[in-house]
Image (cartoon, rainbow, N blue to C red; front, side, top):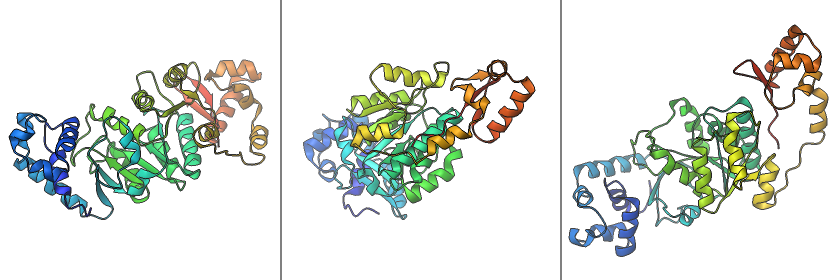
Length: 364
């Protein structure tokens, strides 16, 4: 539990319904720390907060919320980090609307580490997930902490990749820190709490709601030196994170893909608007810090030698069986049999509509 003697006052202000983050920052600028704010008369506070918020300030609801938060903080590796705390992430002080208080489960020191956001589609392709995991692992091995949002698809793969290196990973939640969303990631969330950090600005018990996630996204980018979008449709929430990163002065990177895939149109739009095109983890590391990552000796030669003729003729865009038959001069039975072998070997992915796509191992 935090040793900050004024933590209950921070909690009281941040848990007051109707007291916006901007209003809270105004109160802090005018009166100082929360203890000083709470000692002021309601008439002095009135220019900064609504009548409803001032009424709720001492309500039973708020007192119960403070008690619940203090109970949560008594558990090992649970923290509440305020704007006045030396552990508050410096990167968030650079954004326009930093949260007054962060709930953290895990390793709070990661909030000060150099970090990179890796985000993308929830409905990711197998290739996209492989890229996210591979890139994130390389970034983590280079000392960058991977920041993402615990969503299915690209976020999940990025967290898993980050956990495989010393940089580890931070999951920024769109719920209270005591709620795992989606539930399918409960095991991953527990692993991140043990070896990385879960972070939320929302009060305990806050359920998933659509309007929470854009706010969550600004923290994903705010904690990071840059934002890599792996796969994203044009309507993807990942583009909100990328826009927030650009607004915050962070670098934005995007991995290009097939012109026929809806999952890459968001990345292509970002690149058209100035995002840096990325083909390897080395591209990002060189841009951020000059780190060079050499491919293992002979890797490219070994991969090329292992490709069968059918795989070599597939190219990298989705393709159907008939087209493959024509390109490889093989019968449909031979092509189907070889595609099954390649799919089982993880070299080809079956797509909807009877299409197949060559899997490219994530670049290191």
